[in-house]
Image (cartoon, rainbow, N blue to C red; front, side, top):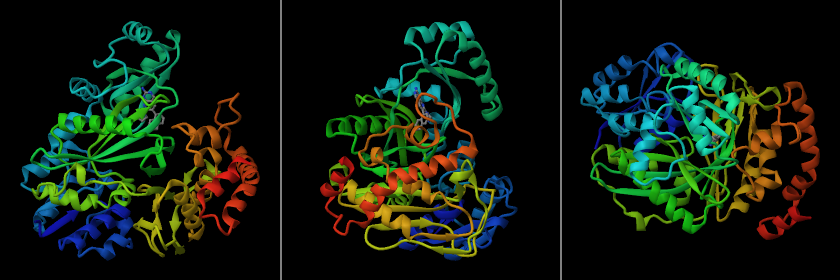
Length: 497
Ligand code: MV4
């Protein structure tokens, strides 16, 4: 086993990795930028090293600094967390070339999954369902229109090098194609340095379901079940849960089998996630593979009892998986809320500044993963995630109750947070009834009535919010004040009144 691990990240995920190191008796070495001088990860780590200015390019994204530091302090492995270098195959290759262990997949697996057209071709070859569409880039408008007519409008134009929602455009008719094609190519070139685009059939109102897998370096693969991640705003996930109550046992069998095929197809090892779209009829389609630990990994940990970060470290150190598929059992339900320093009443703009007071929930079935404390500063340099609140209980309804209780226990003074917005989602009857898709947040909270799908102007949001609050306060008061609301059926009855 490694004696020392360098953690090339910050915030809550650095703290999460430090904790795994401590549990395993490994020395944790943290790095920090100027802006993170007073962050929790610098206090908890065994060793801390300053790596430069606040902007990520001179600190957390400075390849030479991080690799040189690992050599200097004799760290035999680097954990990248998520974001930053975690899915950068050039960084991984450089780490490998130095004889340092990257706690993640090989640079080859990452490169194979990085380009979407390549990934789609690989998936088709391995019988993983992909969205109908092209596997080759579209060369010109005529070709694009021809193909779109074959699969039928609407289609989605996607950048081959894109991902996470960047470089996509929906096209509903042939006459829109030309200008959309040119615009998407321009954007793709600017954002990814590659202007290749391809076409997929547009899937209406799907859910986003992803499957967690673990694989060692000896060809052993297991899945750790699925997560439901449809509650998002502009491709930023807000709420994630496991398991998905939309997925029945038969579909679960199929989608987890497909996920393992996907991981095998790229010779994967480490923890990884295969993202799918699932339509109303429970048909599912491969979207992309995330070749890293994910923000939402704790919900999977809570329902299976598996420590995913510990498994990543064991796999990287060359251990075989110590369990097989039949040993992995799901028990209960877990939901994660992402607490962001952003203002729902001001178009969700980041809200920066010092955290003056920070009181957080605790108690039965409550887990908090965070990287801040009183006195820490939220800056514009990085992701505005303050805290992840993960609630666990026997069933979905009691987790929602627990989430309402726990969200209300936060007391954060300083930056404005999205907690009131999260409360509204958890109080929404369609969320509670598991009646939603990837458009839920936009449709229910941020749009005018469905007749007019346009985004409403910022100054109108507060009025809408108060209307929602008013409409739902009766229900939420009932939920929260019912002294005996642990009876989930009775609680659900309230919704049907
Ligand atoms: C789609 C789609 C509908 N049809 N592809 C967005 C992120 C990127 N990973 C893929 N995305 C989508 N691809 C087809 N053919 C809808 C989305 C999409 C989405 C997917 C998952 C989670 C949230 C989303 C929000 C908007 C659009």
